Amino acid sequence: MILSLFGPDGVGKSTVSQSLCEAGWQVFSGTGVASWPDQTWHKSLVEQGIEESSFDDEAHFLEKIQRAHQLARSLENKYGKVAIDSDPFHKTLMHDYRKLLPNKLRAKKRLHERLEQLSKLANITQDQPIHIYFQVDESKDTPIQAEILQKRLSSRGNLAHFDPQNVEQSRASIEACIALKDLLTQKGLKVITITTDRSFILEDFVSHLTE
Image 1: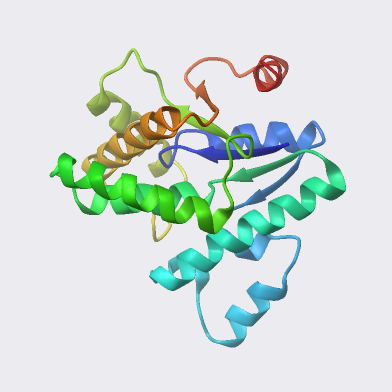
Image 2: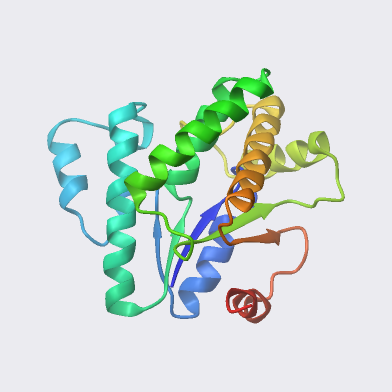
């Protein structure tokens, strides 16, 4: 079983990932190549002088998607239970959507086009992976959720290169995630929603995976 985690920055994916790791899942960061169990590609990037955490390059993102999902399948074959924290498959789709805002019609059209392309690249099927969507709280409107996310990000100290820099950027990330979740659901892929403003109980979450 492979879980693919996505949601706006600051929503709490890493906290849940840590719970999964403690419960025996193999967890790796989809966007942080330096943390991958196979260091081959990271060493190659370092030798080329590429700072992967801030390298904004289309070909690199595509290669990262392919490599991350190859790694996930390899770990699944060996260990059975794998989670990709911040899957680059979703991250790239979210980035594409945000770039075209505020034109939501163009953004959604682009999302449809890229989903097909990236699904083939990552070998996404109806069964694998299970897409885990993180939200703050659906009962709060988007601006309030964006403010919560920015407070959480600010509490970390210095923001990472690709982190939203203000409330408006967090709001755009939320909108991108919702559009992506809706599209994945429309395509018949399995999507499970986690609301992080509520208490997270690992056993309840895992029980959803077999429903």
